[in-house]
Length: 381
Image 1 (cartoon, rainbow, N blue to C red):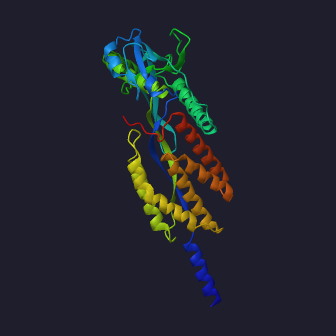
Image 2 (tube, helix red, strand yellow):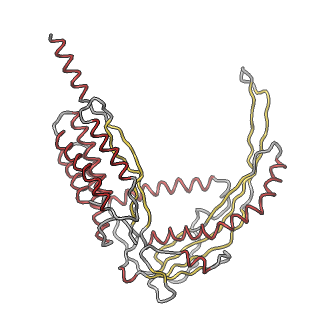
Image 3 (tube, rainbow, N blue to C red):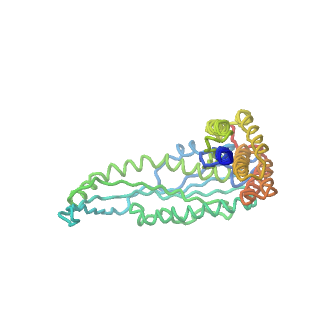
């Protein structure tokens, strides 16, 4: 009898086991500009210089700053773009050796394959002159900046090792040829292109194929250049003064414990949360989104209170639920609630590092919204 009772208790304990998995998704939001400018001062003028051959009127018509008005004169800010024409970089030969081996591993034949690669580059730079009003960087932003610096270093290494970009100015800081001392931002707008031939067993044939492609590819590069430069310019200047599309690859917690009594409802809640968040757009208001997510938030708050014992399995479920709540509040632009969850983590004494990070995230978002005089990170025309 005692053995049977112990067996039942073990099965009951196993049925309450909590396994937590991570699931990530992309969540959109409006990135705030580097500089805040009052609404009544948001006018700008554009100037294109250099030997690009791009029609200035076409260029001016395509340039925009979200929330700003482009004017012909008496502007509060000036956007200057210096762009050269698109040229070709030195071609590179790439050789590949294909070996055939027998069962013993001995090489029985070798075939050399050749192809040629070539790149195109249009050197360009952007300069912004106008009001300078940058928010002080927060602890959270410093961490994000450090991550971005690491990614930029990796990207620069890719440029240096890319045969298409060898010998070009891509990735290097361009000379500041713009006048005046009131420049507040500089952007490398250089555009790069590349193409390659098919593989041939003859280097000469591969080289001939490259020469046959050169004129058509250069023409294609030059045809793409105006629109590419417009896009890179708009991305650059909207980062300085205008709102732009941003997204984070966000981590949430899901319950993977089929025998746990909360499993079905918890997974229904997280599945619905993912589907609703997929509809979140950086340039649409969030009122309906908040309304749709309210029952899920209410459910998570209930789970947090229900599983608040010191039992190890309850602790795991409560911690995962608090993570989901804090993350949801952050991307719904409710920073006070994100900070509050972080503080609850710290008081609780479980996953305190997560709590400290949520506090930094919430406080940073509070500062950001206040600095830009907005309540939500969404840009609605």
